[in-house]
Length: 298
Image (cartoon, rainbow, N blue to C red; front, side, top):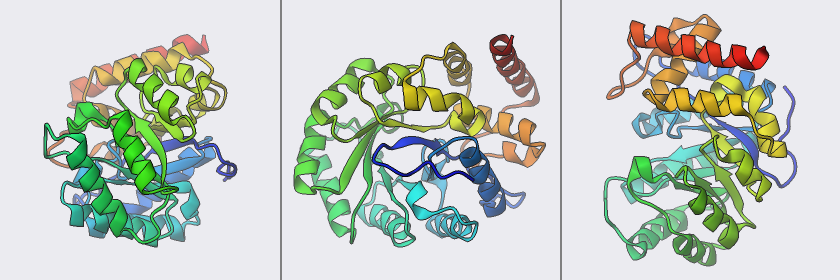
């Protein structure tokens, strides 16, 4: 597979879906095949255990098995980021240390999502405790996704963490879907890799200096995203696909497409508390998905 990860620009990382076997456990073989496919289709990197990968429900032992499987398949650690999703400092450190010790390029570090209404001082203390406990902390992308965590990251907090841990903080993933927020991160921290999770505003962000995306949509249309991430090219089809997906449970919808397109119905499985699309929902979504892509092809 081509290696597009060289250079200083972050580029496109697929926020990998996590496949589960009939026993409900993570299926490393399916994961490897899927990771190899999206890299072949133009992704520069992959991210394990992010939001799209149901990372908050993936146990430490399973995370280790996933990392080992990718390594055995020859997918280099410098092409891998790993999501950290924990409210306990000790659990966050364990997840982060495991990934870095396995050679991962860095972490997608979410805030302690169980605790709502906390201020910057508390968040600074939490992030400092986690990062300070990680030997050789590197490649840390701070994860701003308030719709999921309900714990926003301010521009000022990012600045404090950069000052406290120079060199360790390399990016911010802004999944707010709010252009004003993206602009604020770019203006204050444009020398970092500002990554945009909402593909609808990604082209505009790239043209304004964003370095790319950690992107769930790359699981199904990686080839279409390359021109957006690397050239800032607008793509109405991608925006239409996003609209169709966010109108449904996002992870089950993405898995529905992978299951159909791979000929592997097992891909539709999600881990509780999520539930897959039912048959009627799946038919309706796949029909809309195919119509959107056909219009572009026509």
